[in-house]
Amino acid sequence: MNAVVERPLPTPRGEEKQYFADLREHRMPYYCCADCSSPFSRPRERCVNCAGPVARQWSTGEGTVYSFTTVHRPGHPWFADSGPYTIAIVEFAEGFRGLADLRLPPYAQDPYIGQSVSVEFEDVTPDITLAHFVAAQS
Amino acid sequence: MSIRGAAAIVGAAEVDTWVSEHRSPVGLMAEASHRALEDAGLTLADVDGLFSASSYYAFPTMNLAEELGMHPRYMDSSNIGGASFVSHVGHAAAAIEAGLCEVALIAYGSTQRSDKGALVSRAEWSAYEEPYGLVHPISSVALMAQRHMYEFGTTPEQLAAVAVSAREWSLLHPDAPYPTPLTIEEVLGSRMISTPLHARDCCLVTDGGGALVVTSAAQARTLRRKPVYLQGFSESSNHRAVSAMPHLTSTVASQTSRLALEMAGRSLADIDTAHVYDAFTISLIMLLEDLGFCAKGEGGAFVADGNIAPGGSLALNTNGAGLAFTHPGMLGIFLLSEAVTQLRGDAGARQIPGATTSLVHGMGMTVAAHSTAILTTDAD
Image (cartoon, rainbow over all chains, first blue to last red; front, side, top):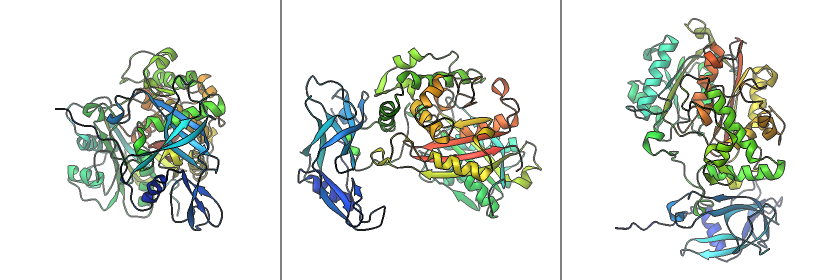
């Protein structure tokens, strides 16, 4: 009997639900203090710098690879058959960072820091949409 | 009120530092506790404070109390990952100075090698990272390594030199798990796990138990072993998820090092032996930089030049520590016990002659938590 491996998905709570609701718009959100303009990658009620109110903004989704790693030993059984996969931290033009997988074009060279990326969105469940980073074709 | 010089480590023990045939995690904690108390010339009846952290037990001081048949009057289960036990020494000193506890017992045990052969963790994933298949903790640290190479030109060979130096120290230990030197080529030829980190860039996966006994400076001076005084202590949190790490190549270990040395009234030049958490080659390089042993970005060259190998300028991890001697999930207590061994003059072939002062730095999770202690055989 084969056991079906479940895809690792978060169970968002509270303000985390805001993030995944925003991704359902198929746009890249970030969260910005209304008083001091500090940008954050994840929702929070109060600014960490001045405790001011934080509101969602939409990013252009333009970013560059800040760092990456290619995983050769799967971090979860769901990835067991996918071969090596790359995870990246991307720095967006608005000054916040995000982490996601980095999808490379076929026959692409190795990923590199500074590489331009865009964002694609995948509706996995009614509650969870995931962002994926896509390296620009070189 | 200051904890500087208020307390001293008077007992220390390690148990089954490679594989444990017959002991559970709490069994290891209990046996290490008994041996540490024998080392101190004290008994369970003298102990009134318990300190522990664990990946196996949600309430580790309660498991330990039950196993030892104790009802302490002070307990601390602070868990910041592998750094916890360095913090426990500082917390024990504070409790002792405040009169809440007279004899503190700090204990740890893990059977992760016997159980799965992989890191056991009860830590939850961040909702923002969980879907992407990071290997915990190596992928997070690999992201730091890649950035360190980009910012400073650090090379895979320099990372490998960290593991080679650790193995060289371990060969001086009678219980060394590997009997031969390690080469750069072996490290680079070992299996790639999460680029740029290979299997040999990672610490060992072993079983092991350890315990320390801490008491007031005054009581310490009445006991059988030379006291190892806590003169400085500081802890902090850098981040929790790597995606929120402010700088991928530096941490608040710079803050904990500075504050611990300030409390102790000492500088790095006073340090005879250093015991720094070596979960990965790159994380040790980053910590050597942050602690101040070399400049930021120069850690790779510092190691490649032989500075942390036996005979080098810095007597670092003189038993081979996590990369070469033992690493049962959380290393902190074993860094402390090796420092105590050095400061008591019991380190045999690996003894640093005349060692009086040690810096111990614990790291937790993905280079995320930090705890620095300054230990000396000087009473002030």
